[in-house]
Amino acid sequence: MSRNNGASLNAMITCHSHNGCANEALEVFNHMQLESMKPNLIIIAGALQACACLDVLLKGKEIHNYVIKSGLYSNAFAGNMLIVMYAIFGSIEIAQ
Image (tube, rainbow, N blue to C red):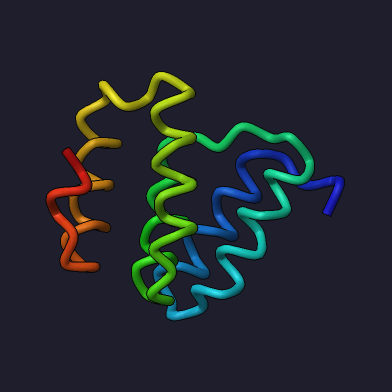
């Protein structure tokens, strides 16, 4: 996958996530992390959706930590995505 750029990885994660292939979406996201690529908000949204589909709260929390460390937490879209993910897990209080 080394030839993939952010746009193609974004498309892969989003399409996998929206079409019931959550495992594949997280595989691509994990690959991005291994390659030290920085995900944008759309990629983060797809990864969070995949976490919710797969019931993997720990990975969702890892992504939440990335959102905080990268300074994206003040973005309304990012905050909303996190609230939705935690609500799906029944842990809305963690989103605060």
